[in-house]
Length: 315
Image 1 (cartoon, rainbow, N blue to C red):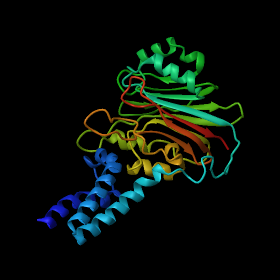
Image 2 (tube, rainbow, N blue to C red; image 1 turned 30 degrees about the vertical axis):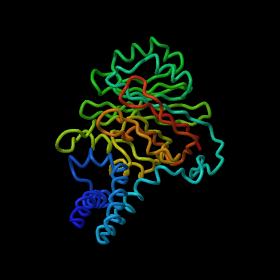
Image 3 (spheres, rainbow, N blue to C red; image 1 turned 60 degrees about the vertical axis):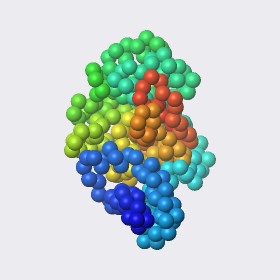
């Protein structure tokens, strides 16, 4: 009885770990489920404790390997990198110009415009990327004073969840709209007072929530520009965590996740108030030539997502 009980508890987490570290990502339901890997790591630790309590050595050995595998995938997000200002071209104590980035999903344009503009006023970001940006949201935000604080904008409003925008303190030039499945990911090139030009992408691929992987989710992530070359920041609702293979591939192609760099990569940005625990699907990715000085997950402003804020240093 003890043997069966231990294996019933240990086996699901062992299979989870095997798929997570395999380099292979199955279709639905794995794509939405893998977002909860940090909680699976906790479950694996509890299964190890149970196997030890029941004195089941074989099950305990499997549980230990599972804990080590999931821990190696998850724990680095809670540990800051060697230095918050570290970067290939900058090094510790970098003194390049700062770029402050705020990103917010507006919940089909229904977020509280006054609260969001108040957040902009208090944080003083240089760049604001918005997702689920509707024509009505644009009117409310600009009536609340957003254009006075961030006078430059590239906006792609749309009814429903597919609109996006980039607002900035400094001049912007419109870039190519990354559009797929009704989701538009606005891009703009910002000219910083220090002379640097930085491409900004307001990221929002569709959510992988139906049976079968939605092509617009995978293709939306794959169409995001790879790192290298020009300075670039990807900010917004990625509908993916660091446990999703396409996002890990994107990071490997020349980006750093600001939350991960600062040791705050386990702070949930969506959910946590209903039956499901929160997950981290909103990110600020900075090109590898930039350094990360700060990252925060902020209280919600009338949306199901929490805004995220990062302070970056240009090389």
